[in-house]
Length: 242
Image (cartoon, rainbow, N blue to C red; front, side, top):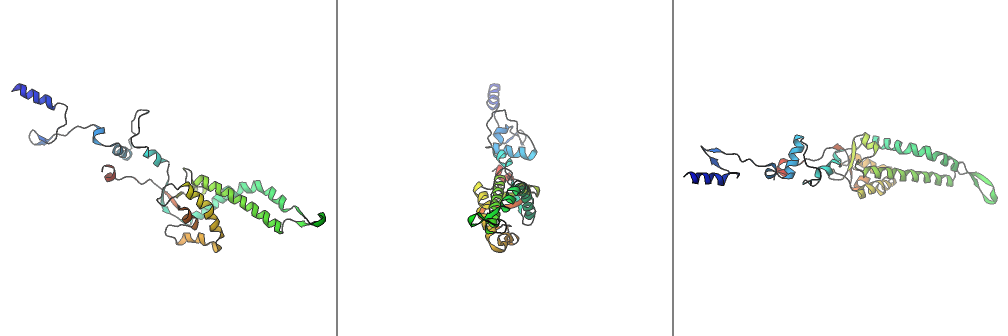
């Protein structure tokens, strides 16, 4: 009898048991953290409780690096319209002032250059002539190219915003309020801006006031939104512990 009891005790030693034992009280099974929860569930709990995961250096991150990618991506909250005018003016000063300081001497020299007619006779200055208009358009094109490079470089980066937008608390996002694609940002700041400025009466800009998502024509062409800065959409308990 004693041997049977000891054998039964040895057979259960170290194993998890479930159900009711001894007087109808449930015996809680002590399970290790790895057995109880999946890595994604543990990462979720650690994020919610502010616990830093203790992984040995060089160990494999079973969460797939999701937290790192989310940390480098900016998310949008609410599309905006009129505050974008302020950010546009700030960016115009940031790009325009240095450009004007560098290009102004050359611009003045070209406009003041004499116009030589037939026989080498000076007939006037470039300023006020058709040649002067071409000079003006040349420098406007140079400024537009510089402004486009500035906007594309910053809006497609991890910042997702120009300096003017950052000062106003705005970010450029895709339709899902996440990071926009490089192609979308390029379309927005090249062909989109060109079409926007060619259409008469600035209709492309006025669309911001009436569109539910506060989209201008260039936003529609690039598939982008300009929103106030938001937070990453967190996973719910039902999604993590499903």
